[in-house]
Image 1 (tube, rainbow, N blue to C red):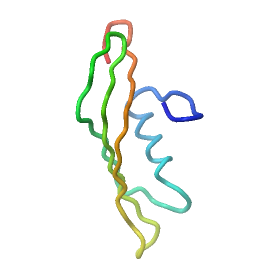
Image 2 (cartoon, helix red, strand yellow; image 1 turned 30 degrees about the horizontal axis):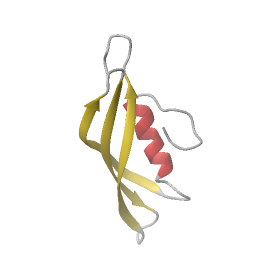
Image 3 (cartoon, rainbow, N blue to C red; image 1 turned 90 degrees about the vertical axis):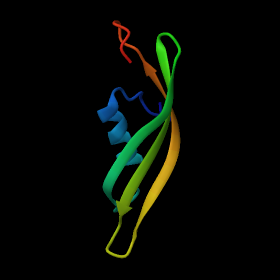
Length: 82
């Protein structure tokens, strides 16, 4: 859950968050890769140690790659699915 924002639910919501978060100003996101190192089952919750890579472009001469780590907490549904 990001600071000062609502909780994001599901992979599509998390992906959209990363695009917004890594897109300051007039920047185009070329690609976004979300992955994880491991998941720890905590009963009703799952703790995920994740990684992200964002390829961005601001103009023909300005582009780059941002890499980072994240810790995500997923709540299981009533059937126990993460």
